[in-house]
Length: 213
Image (cartoon, rainbow, N blue to C red; front, side, top):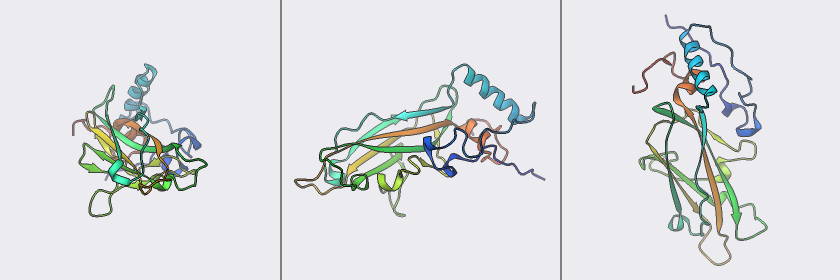
């Protein structure tokens, strides 16, 4: 009979999001696995890699988006970043964060984030947001709140090294005189797939699977 497994660390999406939480989430540091066990050996390898400076978690940063004119999709700005890793073939996109960095009209009205819309896609095919029928966009005000500034995935997408993540940001204010030009920044949190599975046990005991499965 298969043994049930408990996550070592409560996923950070349950702890308020981003830098406002403890480094290991609300539950603190993980339990130490039994020496010689499959998980123990895997974590020993990961610890050794980390001690040699081989990062497990990385923040991928898009270049600052050029100022975005009002007018919605007509004036949208697009950027693409390639997924790279220094030791594994697969990674997980665990969270992303968008920030309004500037507006041509000050003081802010409070509507700027609600009119900054984001579309995020993998290889131009798989979109993060949908209206149930096709690809859609969502606004910064909904995705990134002061309480949880990072949007944490409940089931982080598994990406292959070499995939491309494309972000398209649009200023949804009406294109007319007196509407603000907006600037934005977007970051992604990426973690090695093996480490994510070892920490959160979402693979139901298959942490030893081959990377190319």
